Amino acid sequence: YILGDILAAQSSSVLAKLAVGLDGQIIKADSSVAAGIKWADDSVPKVASSYVGVRVDNTANETSIMSVTLPGSVLGASNAVQVRVFVDEFTTQNSTDTLTLKAHYGGTSVATLIFTGGENTDLKGTIDFDLVGRGAVSSQIGILNVVLLPDRLTLQNPSVMGHNGYINNNISIDSNANQTLGVTAKWSAASVDNEFGTPAYIVTKIT
Image (spheres, rainbow, N blue to C red):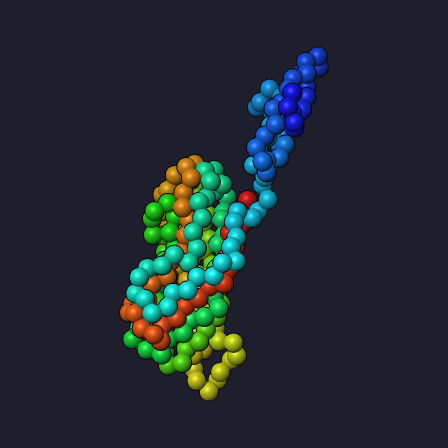
Protein backbone atom coordinates (compact mmCIF):
# COMPACT_ATOMS: atom_id res chain seq x y z
CA TYR A 1 0.00 0.00 0.00
CA ILE A 2 1.00 3.64 -0.53
CA LEU A 3 -0.33 6.88 0.84
CA GLY A 4 -3.99 7.28 -0.14
CA ASP A 5 -4.77 3.67 -1.12
CA ILE A 6 -8.07 2.36 0.29
CA LEU A 7 -9.81 -1.01 0.63
CA ALA A 8 -13.11 -1.54 -1.16
CA ALA A 9 -15.46 -4.52 -1.06
CA GLN A 10 -15.79 -6.22 -4.44
CA SER A 11 -18.24 -8.76 -3.01
CA SER A 12 -19.52 -10.01 0.38
CA SER A 13 -16.22 -11.83 0.93
CA VAL A 14 -13.57 -9.96 -1.09
CA LEU A 15 -11.69 -6.80 -0.15
CA ALA A 16 -9.37 -5.28 -2.73
CA LYS A 17 -7.08 -2.28 -2.89
CA LEU A 18 -8.28 0.77 -4.77
CA ALA A 19 -5.16 2.75 -5.69
CA VAL A 20 -5.13 6.44 -4.89
CA GLY A 21 -6.34 8.74 -7.66
CA LEU A 22 -4.80 11.87 -9.12
CA ASP A 23 -4.53 15.18 -7.26
CA GLY A 24 -7.92 16.91 -7.17
CA GLN A 25 -9.95 13.77 -7.95
CA ILE A 26 -12.80 12.54 -5.74
CA ILE A 27 -14.39 9.15 -5.00
CA LYS A 28 -17.44 8.50 -7.19
CA ALA A 29 -19.92 5.62 -7.09
CA ASP A 30 -19.88 3.55 -10.30
CA SER A 31 -21.60 0.15 -10.48
CA SER A 32 -19.82 -0.68 -13.74
CA VAL A 33 -16.42 -1.13 -12.03
CA ALA A 34 -15.44 -4.06 -9.77
CA ALA A 35 -15.11 -2.04 -6.58
CA GLY A 36 -18.37 -0.12 -7.12
CA ILE A 37 -16.46 3.14 -6.66
CA LYS A 38 -13.71 4.94 -8.56
CA TRP A 39 -11.59 8.03 -8.56
CA ALA A 40 -13.03 10.72 -10.89
CA ASP A 41 -12.54 14.37 -11.71
CA ASP A 42 -14.30 16.72 -9.33
CA SER A 43 -17.67 17.85 -10.68
CA VAL A 44 -17.44 21.31 -9.10
CA PRO A 45 -18.93 23.68 -11.71
CA LYS A 46 -15.89 25.93 -12.10
CA VAL A 47 -13.77 24.88 -15.09
CA ALA A 48 -11.39 27.85 -15.16
CA SER A 49 -11.01 31.49 -14.18
CA SER A 50 -8.47 34.26 -14.63
CA TYR A 51 -8.01 37.67 -13.07
CA VAL A 52 -5.25 38.60 -15.55
CA GLY A 53 -6.62 41.35 -17.74
CA VAL A 54 -6.15 41.69 -21.50
CA ARG A 55 -5.78 44.95 -23.43
CA VAL A 56 -6.58 45.37 -27.14
CA ASP A 57 -5.44 48.94 -27.80
CA ASN A 58 -4.22 50.65 -30.99
CA THR A 59 -3.99 47.38 -32.96
CA ALA A 60 -5.86 45.71 -35.78
CA ASN A 61 -4.61 42.23 -34.84
CA GLU A 62 -7.06 39.58 -33.67
CA THR A 63 -6.27 39.12 -29.97
CA SER A 64 -7.29 36.36 -27.57
CA ILE A 65 -9.12 37.78 -24.55
CA MET A 66 -9.71 34.34 -23.01
CA SER A 67 -8.71 30.78 -23.88
CA VAL A 68 -8.90 27.48 -21.98
CA THR A 69 -8.54 23.82 -22.87
CA LEU A 70 -11.86 22.12 -22.21
CA PRO A 71 -11.18 18.50 -21.14
CA GLY A 72 -12.86 15.73 -23.12
CA SER A 73 -16.34 14.74 -21.92
CA VAL A 74 -16.82 17.94 -19.89
CA LEU A 75 -19.36 19.12 -22.44
CA GLY A 76 -20.56 15.63 -23.39
CA ALA A 77 -23.85 15.01 -25.15
CA SER A 78 -26.10 17.29 -23.12
CA ASN A 79 -24.03 19.39 -20.70
CA ALA A 80 -23.36 23.10 -21.08
CA VAL A 81 -20.35 25.34 -20.52
CA GLN A 82 -20.65 29.07 -19.89
CA VAL A 83 -17.93 31.67 -20.38
CA ARG A 84 -18.33 35.14 -18.89
CA VAL A 85 -15.78 37.79 -19.79
CA PHE A 86 -15.97 41.09 -17.91
CA VAL A 87 -15.32 44.23 -19.98
CA ASP A 88 -14.04 47.33 -18.21
CA GLU A 89 -13.39 49.49 -21.28
CA PHE A 90 -14.71 49.90 -24.81
CA THR A 91 -13.56 53.28 -26.06
CA THR A 92 -13.41 54.78 -29.55
CA GLN A 93 -14.03 58.21 -31.01
CA ASN A 94 -14.14 57.06 -34.64
CA SER A 95 -17.64 56.14 -35.77
CA THR A 96 -16.27 54.22 -38.77
CA ASP A 97 -14.11 51.83 -36.72
CA THR A 98 -15.60 48.55 -35.52
CA LEU A 99 -14.78 45.95 -32.89
CA THR A 100 -15.30 42.28 -33.83
CA LEU A 101 -15.84 39.73 -31.06
CA LYS A 102 -15.59 36.02 -31.98
CA ALA A 103 -16.32 32.88 -29.96
CA HIS A 104 -14.33 29.75 -30.84
CA TYR A 105 -14.48 26.05 -29.97
CA GLY A 106 -12.21 23.31 -31.27
CA GLY A 107 -10.57 25.60 -33.82
CA THR A 108 -13.96 26.57 -35.27
CA SER A 109 -15.45 30.07 -35.21
CA VAL A 110 -18.82 29.57 -33.51
CA ALA A 111 -20.32 33.07 -33.46
CA THR A 112 -19.31 36.62 -34.39
CA LEU A 113 -20.64 40.04 -33.37
CA ILE A 114 -19.46 43.42 -34.70
CA PHE A 115 -19.85 46.68 -32.78
CA THR A 116 -19.43 50.21 -34.13
CA GLY A 117 -17.85 53.07 -32.25
CA GLY A 118 -18.97 56.62 -31.72
CA GLU A 119 -17.78 59.94 -30.39
CA ASN A 120 -16.54 59.61 -26.79
CA THR A 121 -17.94 56.09 -26.45
CA ASP A 122 -16.81 54.54 -23.15
CA LEU A 123 -18.72 51.38 -22.27
CA LYS A 124 -18.44 48.50 -19.79
CA GLY A 125 -20.26 45.18 -19.48
CA THR A 126 -20.06 41.46 -20.14
CA ILE A 127 -19.47 38.96 -22.92
CA ASP A 128 -21.34 35.66 -22.42
CA PHE A 129 -20.46 32.63 -24.54
CA ASP A 130 -22.61 29.54 -23.85
CA LEU A 131 -21.86 26.17 -25.46
CA VAL A 132 -24.56 23.49 -25.11
CA GLY A 133 -24.46 19.83 -26.15
CA ARG A 134 -27.32 18.97 -28.53
CA GLY A 135 -27.84 15.32 -27.55
CA ALA A 136 -24.60 13.99 -29.08
CA VAL A 137 -20.90 14.43 -28.35
CA SER A 138 -20.38 15.87 -31.84
CA SER A 139 -23.29 18.32 -31.91
CA GLN A 140 -23.42 21.67 -30.11
CA ILE A 141 -25.08 25.06 -30.20
CA GLY A 142 -23.00 28.12 -29.38
CA ILE A 143 -24.60 31.33 -28.15
CA LEU A 144 -22.76 34.67 -27.98
CA ASN A 145 -24.44 37.49 -26.05
CA VAL A 146 -22.74 40.86 -25.43
CA VAL A 147 -24.03 43.73 -23.31
CA LEU A 148 -21.98 46.96 -23.11
CA LEU A 149 -23.35 50.01 -21.31
CA PRO A 150 -22.10 53.36 -20.00
CA ASP A 151 -21.42 53.82 -16.30
CA ARG A 152 -24.35 56.21 -16.14
CA LEU A 153 -27.42 56.51 -18.32
CA THR A 154 -26.72 59.56 -20.49
CA LEU A 155 -30.06 60.58 -21.94
CA GLN A 156 -28.57 63.72 -23.45
CA ASN A 157 -26.49 61.65 -25.89
CA PRO A 158 -28.35 58.60 -27.22
CA SER A 159 -25.36 57.65 -29.40
CA VAL A 160 -23.61 56.29 -26.30
CA MET A 161 -26.55 54.42 -24.80
CA GLY A 162 -24.63 51.19 -25.32
CA HIS A 163 -24.51 48.02 -27.37
CA ASN A 164 -26.41 44.73 -27.10
CA GLY A 165 -25.71 41.85 -29.49
CA TYR A 166 -26.92 38.24 -29.67
CA ILE A 167 -26.23 35.40 -32.11
CA ASN A 168 -26.30 31.59 -32.06
CA ASN A 169 -24.98 28.89 -34.36
CA ASN A 170 -24.91 25.07 -34.55
CA ILE A 171 -21.55 23.31 -34.84
CA SER A 172 -20.21 19.74 -34.91
CA ILE A 173 -17.07 19.27 -32.79
CA ASP A 174 -15.94 16.06 -31.04
CA SER A 175 -16.32 17.04 -27.38
CA ASN A 176 -14.86 13.69 -26.23
CA ALA A 177 -11.46 15.10 -27.17
CA ASN A 178 -9.75 18.01 -25.43
CA GLN A 179 -10.75 21.18 -27.29
CA THR A 180 -9.82 24.85 -26.99
CA LEU A 181 -12.57 27.25 -25.94
CA GLY A 182 -11.95 30.95 -26.48
CA VAL A 183 -13.04 34.48 -27.32
CA THR A 184 -11.09 36.98 -29.45
CA ALA A 185 -11.35 40.71 -30.12
CA LYS A 186 -10.23 42.66 -33.20
CA TRP A 187 -10.41 46.34 -34.13
CA SER A 188 -10.96 47.20 -37.79
CA ALA A 189 -8.10 49.72 -37.64
CA ALA A 190 -5.12 50.52 -35.43
CA SER A 191 -5.94 53.85 -33.80
CA VAL A 192 -4.86 55.44 -30.52
CA ASP A 193 -8.56 56.13 -29.89
CA ASN A 194 -9.50 52.44 -30.05
CA GLU A 195 -9.21 50.78 -26.64
CA PHE A 196 -10.74 47.57 -25.30
CA GLY A 197 -9.99 45.89 -21.99
CA THR A 198 -11.04 42.90 -19.88
CA PRO A 199 -10.10 42.46 -16.19
CA ALA A 200 -11.18 38.83 -15.68
CA TYR A 201 -13.19 35.85 -16.91
CA ILE A 202 -14.92 32.80 -15.46
CA VAL A 203 -15.70 29.43 -17.12
CA THR A 204 -18.33 27.19 -15.51
CA LYS A 205 -19.85 23.82 -16.34
CA ILE A 206 -23.64 23.46 -16.20
CA THR A 207 -24.96 19.89 -16.06
